[in-house]
Amino acid sequence: MKTKTQLCTGEKVHLHEISTNYSSDEVWDDDKIAEKKKKLNRKLEHLQEKLFSSRSHGVLFVFQGMDCSGKDGTINHVFSEVNPQGVLTHSFKAPTDEELQHDYLWRAHRQVPGKGYIGAFNRSYYEDVLITRVHGQIDEDTAHKRFKQINHFEKMLSQNNIVVVKIFLHISKAFQLEKLIARIENPHKNWKFDPSDLAERKHWDHYQACYEDVLTTCASSKLPWHVVPADHRGMRDLAVLQIAVDTLEKLELEFPPAVPELKNLLPELYKEQEKIAKKTK
Image 1: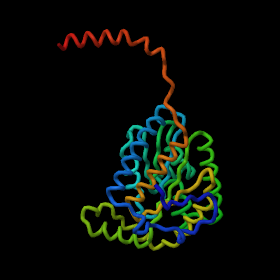
Image 2: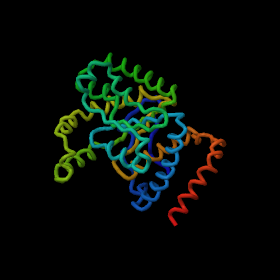
Image 3: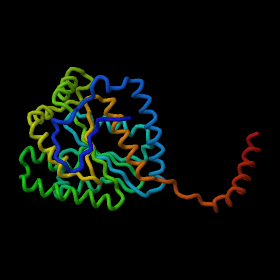
Image 4: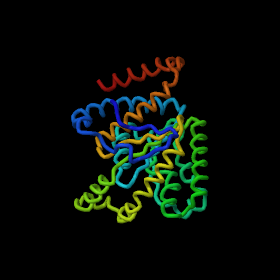
C-alpha cells in the first residue's frame, strides 16, 4: 500500500505543506480497507510472537498529535489483534507530584518496554517541549536544551535494542473542530469532551510551530518522525499498521532455536497420554 506518510529525517518541516487527508481517488472503500487491515494484522501478530519469543529487541511507538487526532483510536485499532500480554500502553497526563520531583524524562523512562515487548505511548516526553513551551512554563533556551537531551535519550534506547518509532498524527484545524462538535452533540461521546481542549485550540498556531521544531530538530535518518495524514480514520489506521509491520520486519526476527534434547521427554509423556486415553474410554 502506498501512503502519503512523510518521513522526517532532520530537514526543515512545514506542516502547512503536508496534507492531512487523501483525495477522493486515493481513499479506499471500507471493504478494501478491512481486507488490507486483516492481512496486516496477521503479519503483525506473527511478528509480535517472534519479538516476544526472541527477546532480542523492544519496540516503543510514540504517538503525538493535536487534540482529537485519534491517538487512542489508532493504538486500539493497530494493536487490538496482537497478544495483549506483549503490548504495554501508557497515557501521559499532567505530571504527578512524585513525577515533578524528578527530571522530566524519569516518568517516561520507567515506562519504556523491555526486550520482547511492544510499548505504545499516548503522548510522551515530547509534551515537555510542547505544552510547556506553548504556555511559557519553560523558556526557549530550556526547550532547545531538552531537544538535545531527548535526542540523546532516544539514541541511548536504540543502542540498547529498544527501537523508537515516532508517529505524528496530522489533522487539520477544521477536522478538530468537527470532532469537538461531535463530542458535544452526541451524548454517548460527551465523556470524551474536555473543556480544556477548547482552550488549547486557541493556541493552534503556536502548537503547530512547536511541533515543526520537534519534527525538525528531534529527527534523523535513524530516528525519524512519521507524519501520518489523520483526517481519514481508516486510511490513518492502515498507514500506522503498515509502519508497525515494516518496523518489525526490518528487525529480521527469528524464533529461538529448537532444543533437540526435549524430544527425550516425549516417550514418558506419550505413555501418560495413553493411560489417560484408556481411562476415558
